[in-house]
Length: 187
Image (cartoon, rainbow, N blue to C red):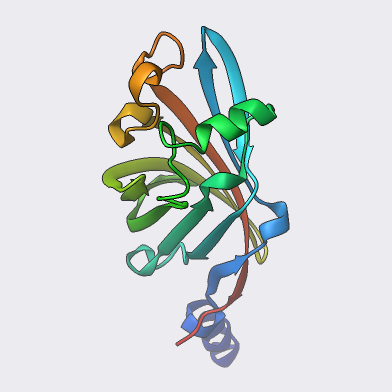
């Protein structure tokens, strides 16, 4: 009986059996945004981005996340708007083709809620961002959902006549949904 108890305890405590969620499933992920233009709520998405995640809920100190977005892949629902926002006054995608977020820390908030802190770089400007994130695990499948508010003028997104926030609001809600499968912990 003692041997069986020791075996079960050993299996439960064995770090090799821990799960590290690091296999991003690109076809199941979404990166969307919502904003107001002339008081009307609109939304869009980015079609091309690369996400790299390494997350072990038991080892938050070693968690990592990096997302790189191809700005020219924006889809606002309007071809004319898509062409406008990749231009110099908005994203200036020829000079700054990508935006990136790199997490510097993940903090547990209780339950399945976390807070990812890191640096968001857009159009040559890098600022601190904190994004609330929920994590749901179902076996070796992890689902990360989160959102945060980006103030576009902090990144010079919408210059000149577009800096008027009565036309396009300053606050843009960024939302993400990532499916990341787990692999056995690597030691």
